[in-house]
Image (cartoon, rainbow, N blue to C red; front, side, top):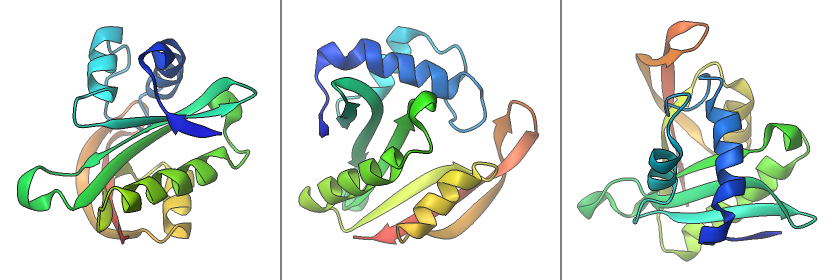
Length: 159
């Protein structure tokens, strides 16, 4: 089941946030980011936040927002995190489809990911299978925890 996140969901969202960002290999958020900073980032005023649940347990979270303010606000940006214990079960795909549908309902004309780490091949495959294309690559834009400086892809799809 998918729904908008409530403030009381934060402890479960933060558990997922820590598990995903702690390895320093997929998101630009610093490993060990404080809980307050993480909450302020994920629940930024411009973000619509969603959760995915299984048996009433939160197993994934996502945010949706305009990629840029003003004249670029017709293009969405989003981020997803699936609890590592629930990855590989199709939750990421169905949750992504849900959030993409939300973006369409909000009136966005496209969706852009600004920094998909090139070693995150599962995410790249998922986004490509959902119609996203790599429209650019930025060299040395990510400090990977074990590979050092590596590129990130900018990915886009029309909605």
